[in-house]
Length: 129
Length: 188
Image (cartoon, rainbow over all chains, first blue to last red; front, side, top):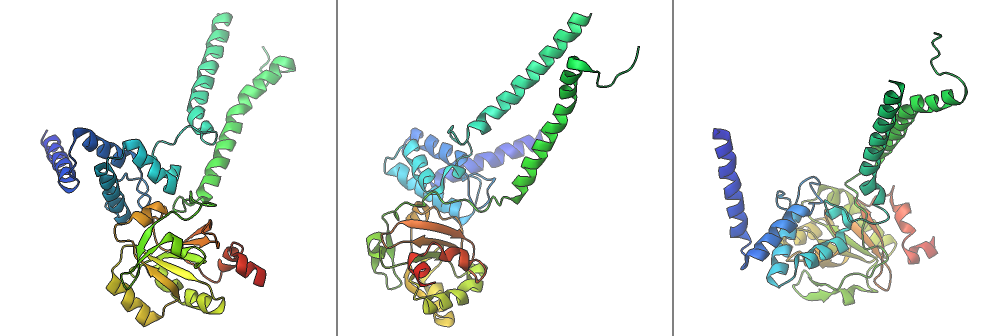
């Protein structure tokens, strides 16, 4: 319980800190900032998102996202800008293209083949009984 | 009843496929993972190859502004570096040689560093750069998809990005880079 409170305390200060450093006028913009910094990868420390990373690059990117939001750019505009220069690698969730089709479909194919295998086995056992 | 592990006839064939398929899947998986180990996730390919340099404004050492338009036709390499970057320190001598020997026009784009640091570096170690560019708010860094130092763009006379090299330029990888430099390729 104590640990939980501690975690809650620090997570609250983290949110407060972001709002202080990157103030935005509307709740929509604040939400967009939160989305973008959690969905985009820091290319320096690659398994961290922009919100968690303190690398120089992540700081530059957060600043740019903040400035673009203040200029009235939408979440999609900003994502497109960064994707244009950094490629799909910056997105934690890659878009569905011909190149990434296998990546998206493979889990379903494995699941389907497992279900098929189980079905065939169950059927053959039930026939034998 | 006879115990026949793999049976015979048509039914046996089907059974054999069932028996061996997990092993085949395992080998395929091992091969893919083994291939994956050879990839370096820190070398992210550039998304800007065969595209023109983005339109940007930089500051020079004397605080003059310079735009992408002024770079086009005047630079062969756009080299991203910083004085705190140890790899940049190692390759500096080679860059000096390249600039001198091949009349290579290098623009140095500074990544997170101060004017004073850069001036001191160039005085102490020599200056291979046609021009040194600062990008105070990081717009240029982000538009070019830069994520570290050193990184180098090879640019043609029309400002089209031909290649991006990640890491230092040295005598070992220079022969691979020279392929992308039309004017040097003709000379060799």
